[in-house]
Length: 600
Image (cartoon, rainbow, N blue to C red; front, side, top):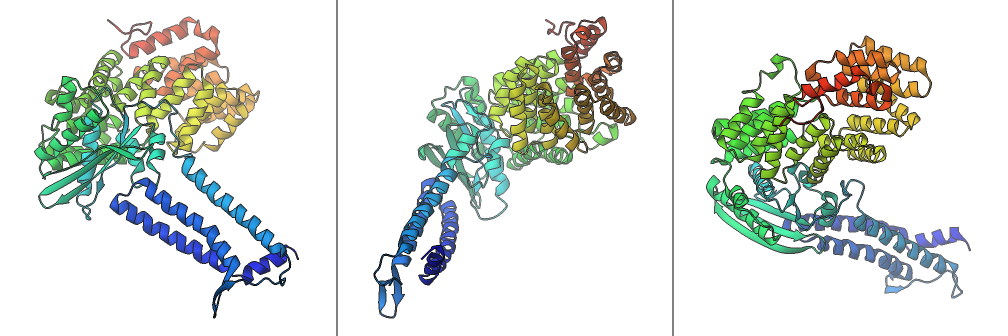
């Protein structure tokens, strides 16, 4: 009697049939329980308990089906085909049950205790006691109309909390990724690198609105604070609730509030709720922009402009309009005709309306950054950080400023903060791996570039960082393969330039010259060509090409990085008068002293 006999016995005892029926029934029960748990706001342990009981029931159902059968005379013990003799099939069965139990609970433990690649913390770090993520507020009124209100209040609450210097508050861009997520709160907290989670809901009924909020410790699934607020549906009452929630959270986390912070978390950003909802929608569109794609920027401009039409004194909306204008990639003057005002005018108006608004100083800092006025940009952005320590965008732009003026160590300090506050932001993560590479840590740069690619953030741009790190690690075969696979992407000119250097370094000068010819015939900008020239060893030609660069073109990452790498790879060129003059011209373009220091 062998294994074939065992499978026949499984069929005779209806094991297959019961297993299929039990699995389908269990799956249906889990779906129903999940819907009910979300509807009634059940804690995470309820679903864990239900799934655990269903899993426990499976081997029990199999044992009962093996041992008993339903007959016309009732439930009776299943008769063995061996007439009382020892049946080897019993041994097979019990071994199978043990294996099934191990697989079921091993898999359950892995899925619940070990976060997936997408849920692991994007920034491995020490989690601080006052770090918090405010999850998107749920709309529970049953219709679509209240949803913009919930989105607006979520954005406003994040804005208020980010003003508290004692708190580390994760940005909206990152937390909204978990809207509707099936991940547990501990997994979300781990992914975002925080100790506390705040969640809540908004319910609108007629002229009234009710906001429920609770502060949770995900590690124990316990509430340390919860409250319900019911007020009239008007701007004054709604924003008063928001200020109260922010104060309660700060108190619960034992954060000390300065007089200025108390004022900033208590104020009303606008006297009109519709204007604020439009502003929040504009910020949401702006957060979705990617390299070279302006659709979201245009939508954001439309939202901000409509908000300003409703409330012309709405400083945040003016700041949003300035940020949208700064984010637009169109370069021909005609492409900017859709903007109601230019970036600088919008930023100035925001500052006129509220000189203590961190967002307004950040917008003006962005203006100065785009105008390559490094001293003025630093002044504005540092003031923004002082006013709102958890404003990730101010840290991000400070990091971008320092990186663009060849100060990678200072850049890294701010970029790290930006990516901690907003782990999902593409451009900040792009700066992170380039800064690591610039300070001589290509292994860390490669790790960060691959993490960004794994997270699905700007795939081609992340691959560009990966290629640069592989080049610095002298892993040329991998670098070449990646670059060749991405020659049709938005990074195609850079990949061509990299391939000149990669193939030349490996001794294939014919291939290197072919890639350089492609750049020359494509009539690309000097910054691409210069990299190709020095990649092939034509350093004098590279110097001459860099000399052709317009002062405003030194604002591009690739131009600065190529010049830096030329000096790094060719020390004799770095000491030449031509190279030193290029460096002075570079600093002059950024309104810095000839040695790169800031004017006093």
